[in-house]
Image (cartoon, rainbow, N blue to C red; front, top):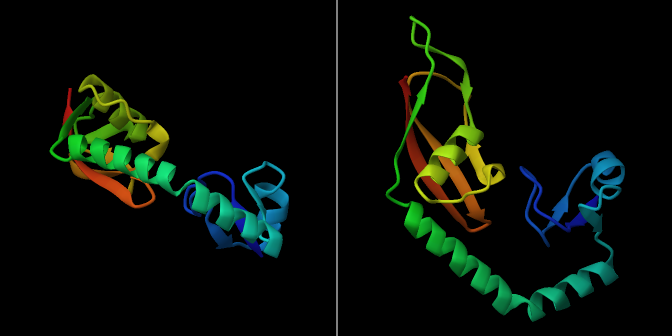
Length: 147
């Protein structure tokens, strides 16, 4: 089933993308929650016209994302957390802690756009990806240390 996304959906696509999903996912979740519409021929024409009219606005949004990416380029984080005697973290370090550390440095980044690939449950060096725009993402290295 082809649908047009009305907002960004993690691991599926970005706003105004035409994606193919299983019909149950589209009809039972995406369409009723307002995250997508069925990609009929008339909806595709309307989408093409809207994108044509909003091309310069989208370019500005992309430039803003690139400016934020340039600021985040050289940033490395150190996250202090409570650790057991074996080096295992109590709990885990996720996107919330990374967003908090970035805000301490003066970068207000929404935690929903920060992706940590694997669960961080031990002391060490890791990388997080900040997806600022569908074409702009920044990799931020961070180190987890004991408090």
